[in-house]
Length: 410
Image 1 (cartoon, one colour):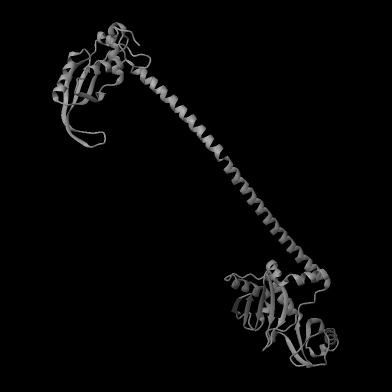
Image 2 (image 1 turned 180 degrees about the horizontal axis):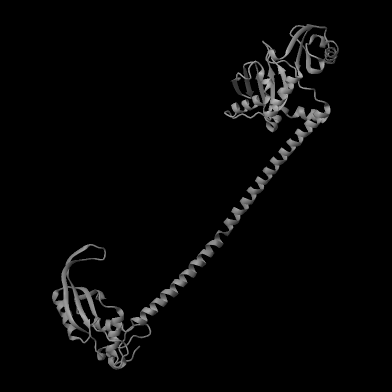
């Protein structure tokens, strides 16, 4: 008990009880209404007619249900309560007696005071307290059945009833408690129970703080490890990008090899075509006509370069479109005449012609004009012309043979 008292002096028990077991709620019940106070919250309700004139004592469960329904509208929960009754529910009488100690008052009330109380000693609870004047005392008594009804009402409210007192006009409430006295053992057990709850609460808070600090430490280490892994992640990303680039290069190389294999026979034709372009004329675009394909072009050249070919013959000649510019229209005519004179093309004709302004590399106008043209021609190269042009070397570049050029290939 001494240890508990020392703890009570060091710790604010009221605040600790409010924190653990809830704030104390004061219920002041009169004949017509009820006032509820919890901390700074103050509420007041009028009792239904069924409960007025102290009839709520006959219906404790209904009274508790009605009060709970009213309190649901407010953010207020009753866990511990103190009930204050008015003078109409308690017997009160003043007496003049000599000065007595607390033990003497209790003894006098037990042996002599019951003659002033209109209740049997075994069915009521009484108290004797000093009154306003010196030598004047106040006797207060209440039937036990009313205390039982109040305890039942608190039970239906799921609250613990800690005190039942009375208020008189001119004074808020008297310093007495009609609840049965609690023995030292019960007090010690109650304090032990409350202490265990507080200890569990503090332990839980300590564990929560410890786990929070540990989680923060782990999070810091994780972030630090991620920062240390950033260089390695960049190396991994660069390695993946290099692998992807290598794969793309291999794919492009394969595509180029396939294109070179398909178009290997075009190099001699293009070289001979370049020799037919006169001075003052240049080509900007060379393409097959819309109805032709590169495979038809390849078959045409193969048919003209091999005597016994197995390639399927083309029913229609392959037509090429040559688009370019010239300084004068005479250069265009010279170009078409050279194409007709060669053995590479037949049916050479100028399909379109026009003019356009020339511009420098930086995009500024030079003031000069050039003739634009579109020449269409059918490929009809004979075997002798293609063989004299030579075959493409291992790099895909067409060169003349030693017999045609009269010199060795470098």
